[in-house]
Each structure stands twice: as structure tokens, then as C-alpha cells.
Length: 160
Image 1 (cartoon, rainbow, N blue to C red):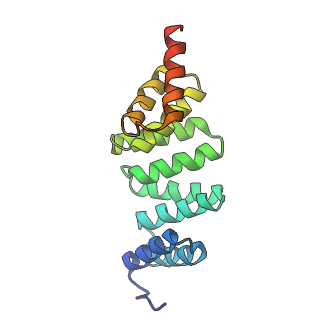
Image 2 (image 1 turned 30 degrees about the vertical axis):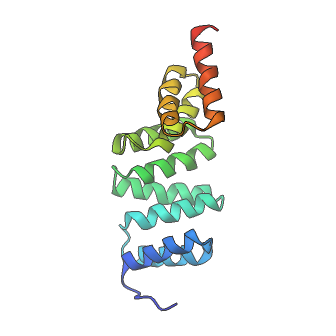
Image 3 (image 1 turned 180 degrees about the vertical axis):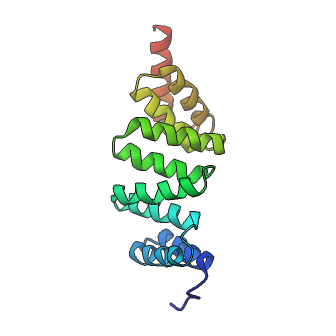
């Protein structure tokens, strides 16, 4: 496919489109091309990080997503994805930090509330878990698993 080789926005967008169709190798190539032209392209780092998560290359994912959050500390998606990569590496405290940063950037990011609530529950911060899982449930009322989990936390809190 012929693409304007010096247009990082176009290269990133093509990488995103290829990601969506499952053509990961090609997507990685175009995202790397975008970064070769413009190393500070936050979306290309974020997309490349997500691809690496999808491929189980967590160290590479963390590297790309850390660059993205260093370049733009208010990028909720980059912080969310970095939190996901760190969670998968079992670096729970670091994951919590990046989920919290994602919510500072976008308080309405409901996937973050869900993931943060689950991690808070893992580390015994049940009041925080209830708060965030409750917010997540408000926007996903049909999630039976989340409802049951929140009910269990509330029962434990209330001594029932």
C-alpha cells in the first residue's frame, strides 16, 4: 500500500485501521514509521503499546506507554493502557497509580473505574473498591458479575 512516508498522522491512522482488522504486524510497521518521522507522536506510542499488550509483549508495551505518558501526562488512554500492562505484570501499585492518573485526566472513563475497583479490592482497599465499582456499574447495569461482586463487598462491609 502506497502511503505518504513523511506524514505521521496518516501513518498512525493507517496503523490504527490495521489494528482494528487484526493485521498487527502491518500495524506495528506503520506505527514505527510514524514514530521514525515524529518520535513525540503520543497516539502512535499509545497504539503501539496497546498492540504489544495484545501480543503479550508487556515489557515493550510498558516502554511505549511510558513514553506516551511522559510526553502527555494528561492522556487518559495512555495511562489506562499502561495500567493494564502493569497489572498484567502483577505490578499492582504501579497499575493503580496509572489508573488514578487516567481518572484525573478523564473522570468519566468507566473502564478505568472498573479496573481500579478490582485492584483496590485485591489490595484490601474495599471502601475505594466499592466506590469505583459502583461508578462502573452505573454505566454497565447489566453486568451480573460486577453486580454480584459489588453486592459481596457491600455485604462484607455491612457485616451481613
